[in-house]
Length: 206
Image (tube, rainbow, N blue to C red):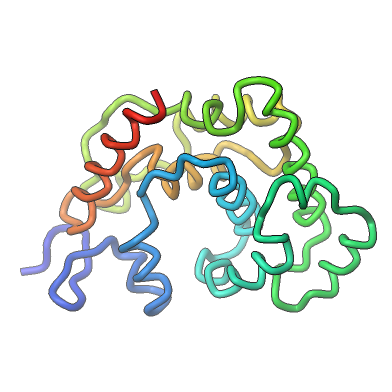
């Protein structure tokens, strides 16, 4: 019997989306999605990729992830913050990434904002200060929200820090990806390991 809401592959129960894009999506679901990201570099990459994902499928972004890393100096905020018009044109001609001028320029803008945040709370503390209270595990995809009060508040805080392409829906997708929330379904075999990782990392953040 298949557990409610999930898909079983290789004898393991997973969130349904993990089976939609092949092995790459499945590996991302199993090893990254919902596991805490608590470093500036990692958070900047996730914010950037979620912004590029807007209006597209996540499978497209995962397929292009290595190319994004090459194009954007491995998402080093210090290096990306120094990108100028020539870099924008270079990126617009890079077939390996999503060639959207507004999103490319937003990534550069956001890198500069990340550097600026070092004079205040820092990106990590700002993001993780919006961790929501515990809520029951979703039973099915319909129980997973697109936004929450916390994602709305995080969006506002990031915009106040001069970041762009960080609307509440994009912020919530990032919150799911970085383990700020655990939206693995209740019957997903990978939910418990994300809970454990989040509890362990919360001790380092708090």
